[in-house]
Length: 138
Image (tube, rainbow, N blue to C red; front, top):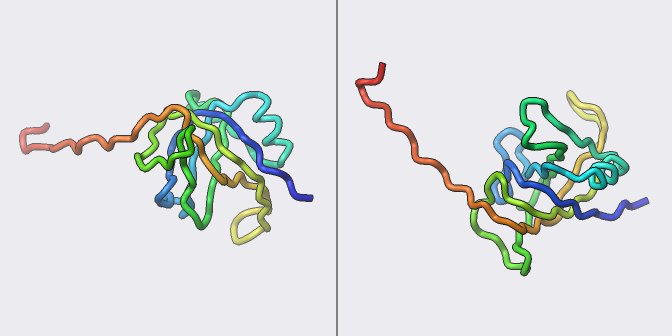
C-alpha cells in the first residue's frame, strides 16, 4: 500500500538543497520544531523523529533527503528560491516515507524523503568572512 506524502511545518536547519551534503552524499535538510501532530503522523509512517539534548533549539526533528535530485525549493507564491536557505528559516515540507533494505553496516528501515520545500519565512545564509590570523597572536 502506497502512503501519500504529508505536509509538515517546521524550522529549517542545515539545508543542503542544491548541493549534496559532504557526509551523506545526499541533498538533505533538517525540519525542526515539529508539532505533536506532525510527529505522530511521521512516526505512524515509520519515520524516525529525533531530538538531541545538546541541540534543544531543534526540538523534535527529521532529516529529509533526496538521493539523486536537488530539493525543489519555492516561496509561498511558487517562485523558485535561488538564495541559500539559512538556519532559522520557516517552511512546509512535503515528506514521503521510503523503505530501504539492509546493507553493509546498516539495518533495513524507513527514511524521510522530501519532494518539495515551501519557504514561508526566509533567512538568507551568508557565509561569514574568514578570520585572518596574524603573526602576533599568542
